[in-house]
Image (cartoon, rainbow, N blue to C red; front, top):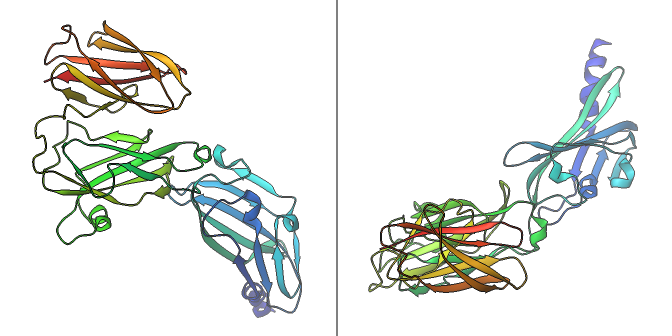
Length: 351
């Protein structure tokens, strides 16, 4: 009798198998998490239930868990969908998971099939699968174009956001630039070489190679790539493009024909250096066409110059002449306030 009592749970566990019927990538509704195939290899029916847990593959956080009602598993194959397991009791570990679709990211979905043997819960089977929720269109590199030749040593990098953009609740980007060594492919350079420039959590679809970094060297080829993320979770990556710097490129400081990028609250930006009495400014707007005021301030916040400008949706490029109020080796700020009252700023100094 003792041997029989010990062997029954093992026999039960051996006779149930689980097959998870989830697409490996793409958009997935929460109801699709219950697309399972259960196989009862034994000769008797079993009354069982299914517990599901969904973890963030990056952080390990349990973002969703749920349990089904009791299901009668006769001998053979049982194909399940959400209708077969209702009513379902969900427990949410993240506010972003509460919609009909799973948010972008990478997850581990685990299932446990169990039954009651006397007063004890006996696990019959468990299985896990990785689930990747990707955007329909990845980000696309824009500028510098692939295999282009640049005449400046502090280039601007820009790209097109992934689509649809409203699938993201915290869209941000990682950018990496690496030198391509002789005999390497661009992908190998990004994967294996120490980056000459890398930055994470960029909120806008462009980045200026900062003048505080060592200039890119004329005659060399560089690879660059952008990775889109939703919060901390990987979403999609661009192709790897290359550009090279002409041997007769401008060597000192930021070239006069480059553009200073305005960012929200000058976030994580250093001082940009300009030559002469002119300044070029790039500003990306998510708003429809309107007019605004571009303001120039000194280090104490005193207004030195203001200009009316028409703003369009997307990239805006401006050129301004600086008057005699602007002196060399002093730090100044340029500022645009959008219609949501967010200030987009950059600091600059004249060489």
